[in-house]
Image (cartoon, rainbow, N blue to C red; front, side, top):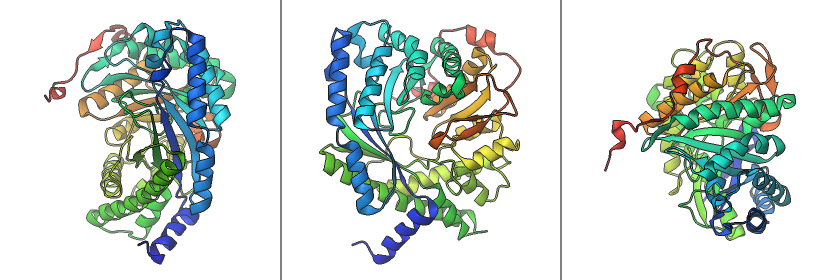
Length: 452
């Protein structure tokens, strides 16, 4: 039985501390849409996506009205197109991206993810067609999101693919120069990507998933910050216990929404992603949680330890609230989407190197980081390689969503709007890694991958 106190407490979290369900994401398999003809394949995926997700937005709005819980986004993820479209033997998948865009608009969802390839050990002709289509596809669409997994703990790092990533990201940036290179905000490079991630831009529906599934991503940095404010000066045991208890409450809200969405749509419930996903709004910042712990600014000495404490205790609290926790789950540190991170980067407290250190212990990696438009493709590939190495060696998911903002440099800012926010242009090392990236080939898996 839910008590009156719990109802009032949840109400307060929603009205005063920006608690929301960040996304209901419906994963849809496209494996049964395979066809040797590209036109027929596009027709099949459009029909299946629009049929399966026809009521997704309406269900989200109905749940929000019924329970008073803001549900910010309704999204779709699909089987990686590099796999699903392989039978067409097409040389370009731009038309597939356009079909996905039409389906997203028809269903009313905010984003559709899965214009993706898994190339951690090598690429197929279909994967190559997808990689060659990325820049045009993401610059011509608004709602299509893409990802490429180039590394894993089990396979090592595909350095040929890493080298391509820098060139592709530069092409995306140039194609959307007039919009602060926004195409790059819809693209993420992964190590150890997961099949059930509900968050964009990295969501796709894994081959091991059911035909369709509902995954929910919760949020709530403001709730955690408020809880810590009530325990100022407390020792670390109390700090950790406070975060755990708060994460439990946040996750229970997500569990309720997931179960209701599953029931209303007749689609199995998949997972709850516990990630604390910030927004540019005041009071909804992971950086402000770190500062509430005792840091003058995010990026100060102690920041990596603070992120580790936050991430671990969010997971510990969340797993007690739901039997099916998955996705990325922890704390996100996207620069442009977090008002505290934006201010820390603007004043110089937060550097690219410190962000990289923080990614060793957070949920993902370098996220929504804007760098000068003249940053070389090799330097971007080097940044990607560093993150992939962190993920590979530590057996965790890491990612890079980096935006070389065409025509802008350090001291300027990029404006993306909405939840994507804005980002100060951060400096990168002036020293080259060109010869390192040019080696190509594959970095073998680390010794800790041999667990059988």
